[in-house]
Length: 292
Image 1 (cartoon, rainbow, N blue to C red):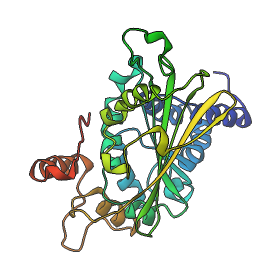
Image 2 (cartoon, rainbow, N blue to C red):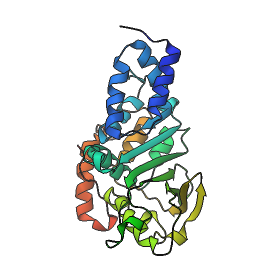
Image 3 (cartoon, rainbow, N blue to C red):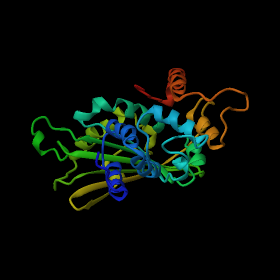
Image 4 (cartoon, rainbow, N blue to C red):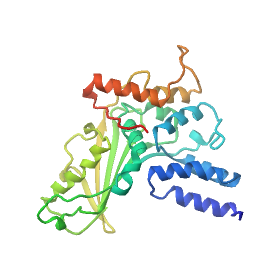
């Protein structure tokens, strides 16, 4: 088997890792790349640790486990020592959406966390967690659908939830799409219909202080791409002891068990408790969906 020089392997891994790919493909890359040989593993670990992607709920279990001690044969102590960014990405384009079930489960779970204090405690060098979605714009006018400014173009939304101790915390929204050169007040119908995809993936209404509208966003056009920027504030709260926040916090303290002697619950158990919680307290609007 031909062996590539480490410098070339680093270029390959870096380019692949920072490209836009579905979470199920990224998960496959996370599994196979370190298994090629020691050189690929040595190159992969710091790159994947520095810009970390959460692809499913099982990765949160793994994160709790390896953060308690540098025992991962792949990452060793690179997570959280080298971690600078954390991203949760979901591809809602028709050809990929069916295979993004696991990523949607992780996205819904994380986006509904009442606070990010455990992430702040564990990841000292991370400024915010980035939630990213891409989908295809839809028609709003059934009579003349071809003039819809959003029809058939990729729309990308990103929410940056800041890991700060101040209250309320800040959340920044950025939506981008190809600029077709025509946009008028009636286009807002296409805008609102396309943004329904955000509800499909579980983005809660309280992420916005007002209704999402064209007028509430700062709009710019750069190099043929239309950008919308929006900033809102979140009032964070504490949740029960079974919440992932508690277990990541315990991981940040390097403990395997809490003060009562109970073991750390896996995320799958936490999700079951959250589902029960959402039935008993529907006003919290916790939507988890599939966790497969």
